[in-house]
Length: 80
Image (tube, rainbow, N blue to C red):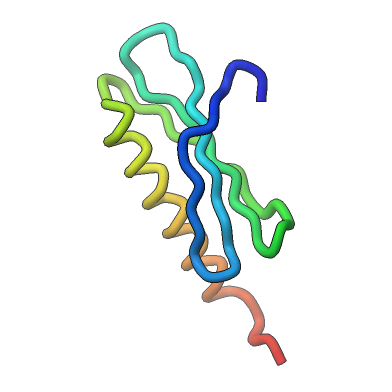
């Protein structure tokens, strides 16, 4: 991703997510996360917050990924 850089990888069961920071002009936190299930891209989440530290922003986006994964898991049909 041009202008972005990797900051965090996470796993929840068979799900994986990767967080990339995006450069911003001010003190805002901007990042995007890609969520995948067994290697297949399923979702892209974006978080932008003014006056937020990198650590707090990454934690907030990680929570957003986990919440999305939990919701998706609840909606998936049961596997045989």
